Length: 278
Ligand SMILES: NC(=O)c1ccc[n+]([C@@H]2O[C@H](COP(=O)([O-])OP(=O)(O)OC[C@H]3O[C@@H](n4cnc5c(N)ncnc54)[C@H](OP(=O)(O)O)[C@@H]3O)[C@@H](O)[C@H]2O)c1
Image 1 (cartoon, protein in one colour):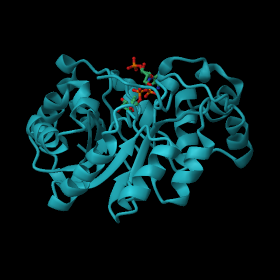
Image 2 (cartoon, rainbow, N blue to C red):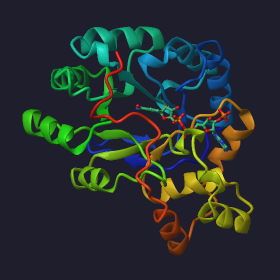
Image 3 (cartoon, protein in one colour):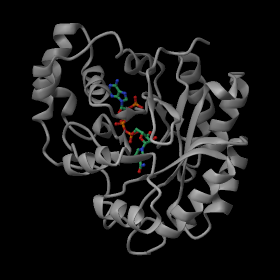
């Protein structure tokens, strides 16, 4: 099982993260072991899950049966909203379900500002990273005001912010803030979750046709050239191969600029300022 040739990005804490991986949101827990095993066979080594996805156990089984040395894998999981007041307990439960002694990245999943518990959760993650059971910590769906509060109150800068980001929703102000503070951007929904006509736009289809690439490959390549970390989700083996075949070509500056021009500030996921899923 040869690993794909994926570049690493160095996080602000010195750790390396593969810039490309595999996401398992909405992958049926009953199918997850098989699908993650196929991704690992395809050469993926970076897996993004979360306690709320309900598939950590299946991810853990796929990891265990792969025989791939633990140090060759990069595993992320996330603290769910209802667990923000017990980050230690929730983290222990995630490790247990994954069957791991350590994860590579642990994230606060949403800021849920209406509850005022994210800051306490972050302080818990700081203790957890201090214990060595996660190598890095970060946040997800944090807007500038949530990051400012976290930095102001704790002084501990997250290694990443995992946010909805794709050509139709480019989050320029937030991305700028993160870059200034050396917070790496993880782009969730990199293909707009299949909920838009993004893959049919001519800014995407023209460079695809020119290169004999697919529209999805063009969009994923655009992310890579912007320095975003991405982990597209697919349940189909052929697409696992397709999505990863983006390191043998480059988009020109002019092609990148045309895709940059697609920003319509159109999100398909929830608004982090009001999202209150429990
Ligand atoms: N932190 C958060 O709040 C948050 C929220 C959402 C997602 N995430 C993470 O980000 C990961 C990726 O985001 P996502 O899964 O929401 O969306 P996504 O990766 O943008 O899109 C997934 C959708 O695109 C389809 N697809 C995949 N490859 C394709 C290709 N080559 N051509 C055409 N369609 C393709 C998939 O269908 P098939 O499966 O049928 O191929 C699926 O319907 C998640 O799995 C999760 O790990 C995090």
